[in-house]
Amino acid sequence: MGAELLRLAITNLGRARARLAMTSGGVVVGTTAVILLIALTIGLQNAAEAGIGNNAALTQIDVYPMWSETGGPMPQLTNEAVASLWRIPGVRAVIATKGLQAGELIADDLRGSGSIIGIDPRLIPYLNVTAAQGEISLANGQVVVGSRVGENFFDPDVQEYAPITIDLMTTPVELRLNRFIDGSMRDIDLNISGMLAPMNGFYDYVIFMSMDEVLRWNEWITGEKPDPENFSYDQVQVFATSRETANSVTEAIRDMGYGAGGIGDYLNSLNQFFGTMRLMLGAVGGIALLVAAFGVANTMTMAILERTREIGIMKAIGATNETILTLFLLEAGLVGFTGGVIGALLSKLLQNAINTGMENLPQADGGVYFLPIDPTQIGGNLVVIPPELLAFAIALATGVGIAAGLYPAWRAANLPPVLALKQE
Image 1 (cartoon, rainbow, N blue to C red):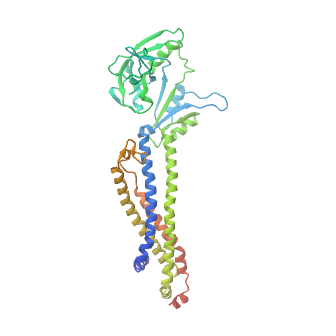
Image 2: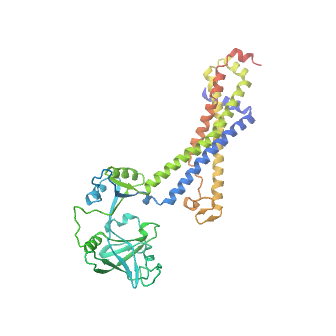
Image 3: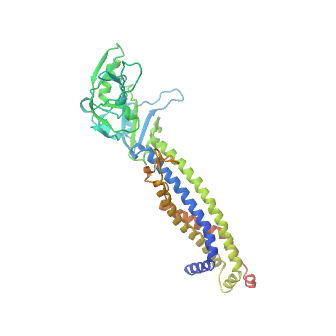
């Protein structure tokens, strides 16, 4: 019965091909608008994510003490806290660091500076850093320098400050420590094992030293031994096992009373923004589908007026109200489905045309002149249409067609047979 009604619905639509084409045309425009507008937000979101960094950066969570609103004691980044962070499910590594309290770099007659940070040598691979020169090793008093530490040198004998760049891998460098209690100084030869590749971030100006070395020199600088009960780290970084577990790890850290944040939080806010944009632009495209729905309703209403006698004959030979209702709903759904399929195919063609055009447009330093993105970050795919978006758009167009034909179909189903047969 269903197959027969489907064939009859297709035959009925084929009797008015021009009207079908014009009615489906509205659905095509609406479907294409919905797909392309949503696909544009997906492409822009991919570009934004590509500009943030790699997946490793998105798993990094910075942990810091929170301000106490009541004035009570705040949880500090102690050894016990670090051990607790290791026990959180989904944590891949916990890296605690301590900074050297005072020091100046000396290279011949030049002076320089850098943020000297102590770290457990066993954990430095978790920082996801690579060596541009040498190797990343903190064994036997070695240090690893950031890519831009060598740019921070100057000549103290000149009146005007002018930065001087030196090659730290070939120039002997010393670290001069100043003792707080008596002002005495001590020079230490820095054994630089390697230089990090540029990262466009904090590590570019950092000198990594083993934690034991930093604690020993801090003790000499201050003249005080670290108190195990009051000792705390300057910074703790937690790395989740994956981007998907980063949110749960962040929430667990906050439940412990610490502040936690990182690029993952920014990405979540970014995704929420694009989610809102997707809904708004999808709604704009949906307006075109709504207009198309009125066209479908008008077409189906006209079909009832033209086929009133035909409906009467069908009822006279035994067709039920449900059969008539199903027939007209099938016709309305086919109009929406046809427009949805054509709209999906048109969207794919426009996607290829837009992406190809983007790749061939003149590029500025930051990407295309009128867009603040670099197409190379996303492979030139400004418009991204996933298969599920096509399926959703076709289903939406079909549903709009059925909804638009519901009232005309109900009218046809409830048309009295006697009146229908009397219709000329």
